Amino acid sequence: MSTILDRVVERTVLDDHDGRSGARLERVRLDDGTPLVVKYADPSTDLTVALTGGIDRERLLWTSGVLDRLPPGLGHAIVEVADQDGTTVTVMRDLGDAVPGWTRTLTTGECDRILTALTDLHRAFLGDAHAGLCPLETRLTLLSPRVAGSRPGELPRLIVRGWECFADLVDPSLAEAVFSLHDNPAPLANALRRNGTTMLHADLWPVNLALLPNETVFLDWALATEGPPALDLAIFLSGSAAHITPTRESLITRFRSLNPHVTATDIDLALLAGLADLAWNKALDATDHKDSQTRTRAAADLHWWTTQARPALNHL
Image (cartoon, rainbow, N blue to C red; front, side):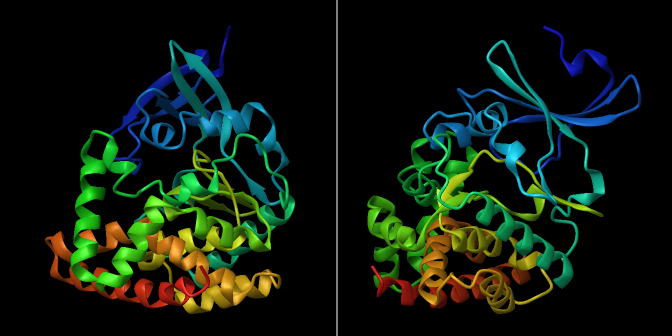
């Protein structure tokens, strides 16, 4: 079976990409000059697939046509998905500098575009539970010491170390509450579902989006999850705080203005989920990072999240 890759005339391996799942990336050029990016991932060893039930979710959403139903103005980058001897080969548009990555800071206007695109996504799939979406309970425990720590590799080791640092840095009662949610996410998941669920991207960081003149593109749908809209906001804030111009508080206010049905309780619960998801990284940087300014910033970031997350414990 012929594929678009049969037309490749030039390849460059991307060794410095931001992915941590173990996938390999190439930038290629077709015979007509079209630039593309190709991702090679072995589902049997891909960390994201392994931690979320063994489902190659991005491929499933592409082949089932779910990604073709994204609302106007919001796109994905996939051109073709194929199998090569058990390896999933995903061919994507090369969006180049339209991907902010970690090299620049998002402006207030760009953040507004992102929140608007998230809102459009959530409205388009409200109440539409596609069979391929990651279960909410799975997403809430993805980076817990029990789940991630069960896998080999450098990233799982760092996750476990980060949660050890977290336990040393925060109030013991809060650490105990977070670890209890890792062991049993049902109370938080049930509370999060009370106001309805939709399809979430659930991994929206500056490396996983592109801002084109007339289109916002979300990249890497491997963690697409059925959950409440506010969780997408919390995940974006947890991974992007050091790379955005507006304050987190102003983005929360803007998100609620776009989503009047999202309550203060929904936000509280989502921020608790954000803490349970990525506090290991903040605690690790606050403790082990070689740069003192980064340690100070990470400690302040962790303090913000622990302060914001505490009210949600009263809702469980």
